[in-house]
Image 1 (cartoon, rainbow, N blue to C red):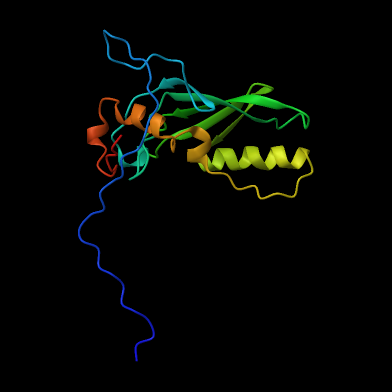
Image 2 (image 1 turned 120 degrees about the horizontal axis):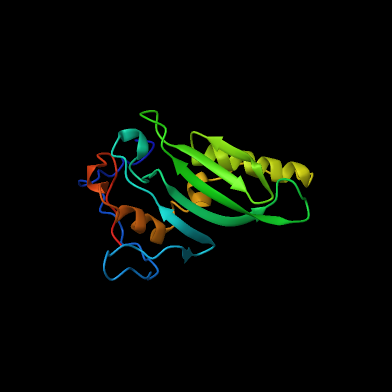
Length: 173
């Protein structure tokens, strides 16, 4: 008697689901998104440009150098306040992008890492430490940067050059 049922076999690649996006204004002449644009709790200031190297994308996200968003989160220096964080993606050669976050209340201390999660984990850890919180310091960098937001994903996917991102799985919006 078998102990478990055999796994079902998949029939070919999984079709991506249709993702809903909020309508955003575009320039009637250039066709580019009008920025800055408010998308959920984020403000998109710049989309950047696509670098088709495999280190600047994976199957789910494209990290375009020049991308810049801002959002509010707990301060790392004042336990009684929130502050605005500006998140950006910088070009870093073939190694892949560098992620930089600058807090409005300590602009001379940018947090820099080789991943969005690395940057935001450091911020969450500091914010928890000054509040004497014994919480998990884990953070989803793609969430905090907005890469998981359907509207921002579409804005990036609409950039010229995304068709050259060989590992990226095209999403439906």
